[in-house]
Length: 110
Length: 116
Image (cartoon, helix red, strand yellow):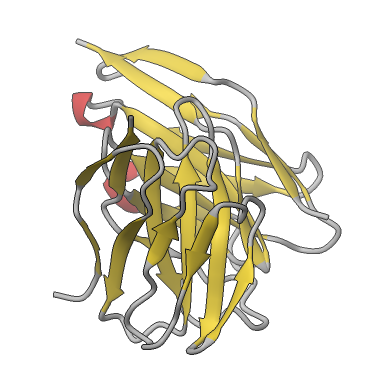
């Protein structure tokens, strides 16, 4: 069975500083992994996806994530936070159906 | 523009009334999904459909019903049997679910339902 755990429910950073949102997964086979972003009262937007190609995945808006099989992790990073990055972020593993983490709320301080 | 539309954006109903949420997609996707989102929680799957005239229960189907008469449309009815219907409802679609471990889902803007 697949599962996903987002290690932080809330992360706060200052504008211009790096962002790290942590995600661990569990899967009995090589998974597909995704990061989605949700702004308040909006639908979810795909940031990036891993599908067993390159382990370092680049997404939209300067985000990237690295698949580490040995650590069963798929952490999301961005070198420099922008105010518009403030949102809820979901790590997702695909096991036929998508299995969502509980979400990490990112706050960006000016 | 290709995408998923949900209507209305906000919906208010009295307790005991059934209500239907609309979801339409023009992405030519075979699979469609309904999720429920509550504050501070992830998404929970209500129903999904892989092809027209076929659908399966998700993790929290009780009190909900769906139909899939057209490829483009997947309406969700929240019945009076749903104990806590107030929530944010999201519709999504993807390429065929069958063997599609890597297929990402595309989401609509959501409908916020308030039942009083």
